[in-house]
Image (cartoon, rainbow over all chains, first blue to last red; front, top):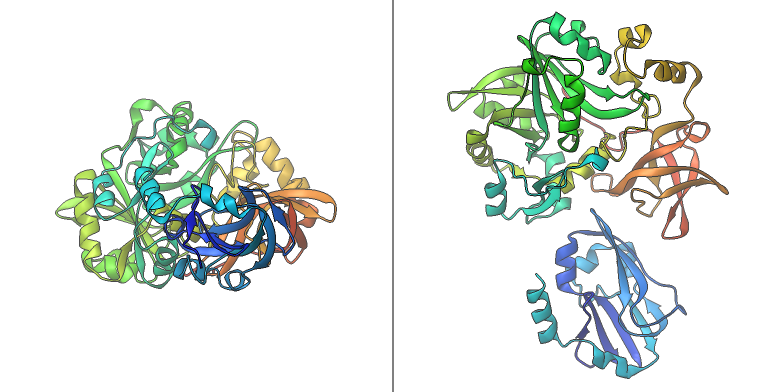
Length: 125
Length: 369
């Protein structure tokens, strides 16, 4: 499986063949605090890169989750809907949001590496 | 009022450096830099208050006094419709500051003290409120106490913990206060709060605020609590947040706050906006503030409320209630749809979600009577 790539809106993407798994970063969960509600997209829904895809809510506020890559939803993580705290516990693992069949796998190259993302977070803190 | 909120957002309470030193996440609120949460986060802070005790810095609120004889402060009743003569010394009452249209300029707590009245005003409204009060009370008889901090300690263990430091506070009954000493200095303690829990609010010199908090925090059952948990606690308790659940265009009848006006003042109708209020008491208001319990989805402030195709209201406060372990909201709906158990729908992100009118509080309070 390929290494994770990161967006400026604090999502991560992991590409395996033409399927990408998407979630929010550990840094994002730390900023949000305790996550109490998530909404994930229905199977078959399509997005452009950067399109609104899911919702995550903490006690304080609701935030959109964007799909950093264009594609069609093949699967959503129902586990984070029934237990939203999974996103806090394991944001870049079991707390994934949804999977898409990507339109153009090359798009992933426009995203940041782990090192670049960490640098981006530090610079924008 | 939120619409009159000061543009400056760099005012600091006496505890600012202390909040920062313990990891408080500071955010602008009503012109002040205030802690929205500490490192443990809103959820843990909220649940801690319900189980133990929490300290809140609410020094941004206006601590205001009117000094004088009964004759000198009674004109306040023209804009604050409570029966001041009926208040015993050291007794507090929750009430409202009325405007000429029958709307609410602020909600506030009035306490009768020896030689006058103490009034606690909302931070964003305080300067406007004082102008309004000066229209009926001689300004030379009043004072805004910028030298005082206000610290709330709330939760089921608050009484035991505070009484260890300030012996005697356990004898106070709900909505009553008294002078005490801390560090050989006068403090004023009332048994009151904004969380739905038993607790106290302590008015103390700025120079002693940090020492007082640190003394409380020596007890491991006490934690500092930010504005985030303060908001979820008060929402579960069904208490209003001015600028959200109350505003200048909403009357006490619409806000389900007619109880905050004294019977005598309602009957005599000698306060600003009384004709509108009396008419609504008699004939009913079009809309009413109610609790709304969404089935699953969190509905935030501004979410529209529907009955079938008809838009019947709006959410004015909404979020996740950690003690309820689910979404909670309050808002205004047309009176005919305001009965407990009424099925409604809330519009969130363009979709309708089931909800019901719920009799507040969402979380049962444990005030000591």
